[in-house]
Length: 140
Image 1: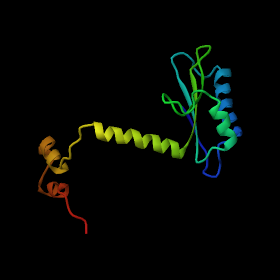
Image 2: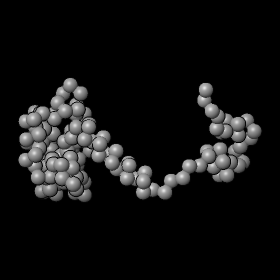
Image 3: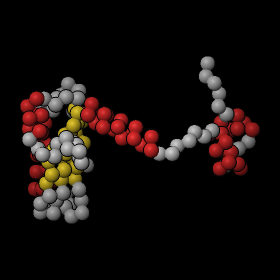
Image 4: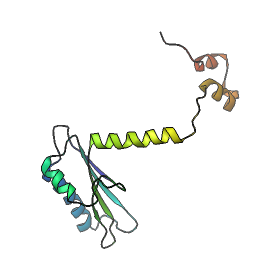
């Protein structure tokens, strides 16, 4: 996996997309990289995507699809599996907020006191001094 994090002042433009395409080319042309049973993911992230780059990305049928929303390009020839991803921080954070919200609603999680759990699972490690440290205290 290659992750290219651009500075907030550096927007994703054609130049940056060409850069990750060059990474893909280097992997394909170099014999140093294994190709069988390996998936390469090259991820480009910045705070902004220029309008020109958006036109290029929107031309890719996979970008912003439901299945893999940030996938820009896939190369699956000659034994290689290389995926290029382009995203901005806002979209990445929003997508993960939705995932976390779904998981928090669907997973059965119940609150439990740390002191009680620790006392139950590690009774031989507790003495009075450590028991006091595990008690919940109100911060003032």
